[in-house]
Amino acid sequence: MIRSDVCIVGGGPAGLTLSLLLLRSGVTVTLAERSAIHGREFRGEILQPGGLALLDRIGVLPGAMARGCYPLDRFRLREGQRALLDIDYRRLGAPYNQLLSIPQQHLLEELLAHCGKYPGFTYLSSHRVRSLQRRDGKVTGLTTKSPEGQTQVSAGCVVGADGRYSKVRQLAGIPAGRIEAFNFDVLWLKVPACGTGSGSASGMREVSVIRSQGNPVLVYPSWPDSVQIGWTLPHRSYAGSKDAVFEQARGEIVRALPEYRDAVGSALASVNDLTLLDVFAGCADTWVQDGLVLIGDAAHTHSPLGAQGINLAVQDAVLLHPVLTAAVREGNFGAVRLREYETGRRPAIDAVMKFQVMQSRMMLARGGLEARLRPHVARIVGRTPIGSKITARIAYGSSPVPLRTDLFTS
Image (cartoon, rainbow, N blue to C red):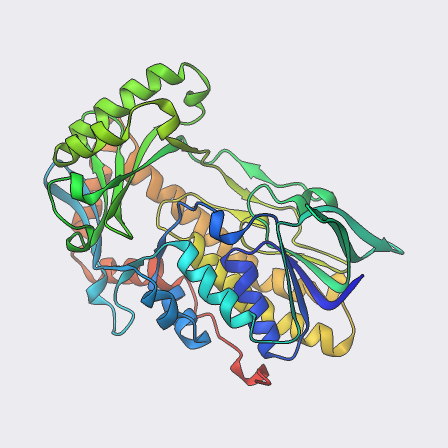
């Protein structure tokens, strides 16, 4: 039996950031992660300025960046070579006036290394959650299964930070609140930059969405010397003829990105070279129960547009940190106490979801007069002071997220 103040499930940005903040506040933490971090593959790699600022204040950003990353200056919506929308992050105040393309693995390894310095940290790698423990209706811990057998963890609070298909949420009986708010999915492909004719990915300093004759394509540099490409397709259309979709994807990617023709031709040999992201919105009916909290994608799921995934996960952890620290010190893990986090956070999450739906309609919609006009309207707005306000909103969110360093004991 392992005993901790808090047991966190999921070793992603939300779970590890929360672990480190709690450990620095004198809270004992057990973190259960179903896979070995070094063997995981991630697609979300873009950090917004708001996330950069928080991670820098926590003390993990320099080390994560030293592992390898690419700074990016702007986001562009292009039609061929013509920019319909140009969001230049250099218009923001330094030093967080850029995006960062960084492998999630680099961030997670840095966070884990910092957590490992604290004696109150227990890390359970390759542990899958099997059940939640309850007493008088209150969650009091969980049981995991690993190659070595079963492990029981007793904790005042269990935090589900285990992603969009959260096992903790499922075991708690909380509906995911899935909403089909987007009309597209994404097929991801990574190709070496050396095969694009552009030399190194380090010279490509932007995230782009290219609208061409086919479906829009997302592209950005990925460490080391790679290019991440996302081909959009109508929602759930991949369930049909995958071979036909594969041929369409290969043709449209090359037409949208002719400079990557050779790289795509070499890397995209079969349908197995593509990774599908089922794009949907979701917001769990509740984020708390007695002795349990959901954060990150386990609580709310978003589109990849706007690169908000890591940003929101880190913000969630920062905002839950003072609530959980107080709960530990008070010995009160009731839903009423924990709901302080949900009540304060939900309005910002709702605002992000509404904004992402608007982004989707503006950038990816095809056909009709309205779909043709929206990008041009956005181009005009982007050159006005309103454009700067929108950039700041995407970068930092609707309101500042305070980091409670006063709670740190070390």
